[in-house]
Image 1 (cartoon, rainbow, N blue to C red):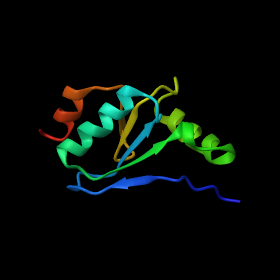
Image 2: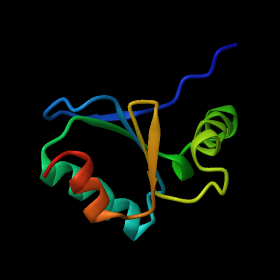
Image 3: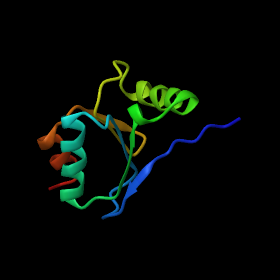
Length: 97
């Protein structure tokens, strides 16, 4: 059985596929999400701590492909690279802002 994640979407300017792995209780995760909203970019996010069972296992497995330490937040950009932690200047630079 294929497990899909309960991903939430925030509409904005398309800059490629962005996926934010976050925890609902993490201030840095929330600041990263807020920054992406302020920048007006289109992105998806998932609160890994609110998932259960196989869904949570899948999210953690996907996260660890990009960030072996499994820390939060992890922002995956275009399925090609990632930014780990709250890195405001790096995120702004990534999107030319």
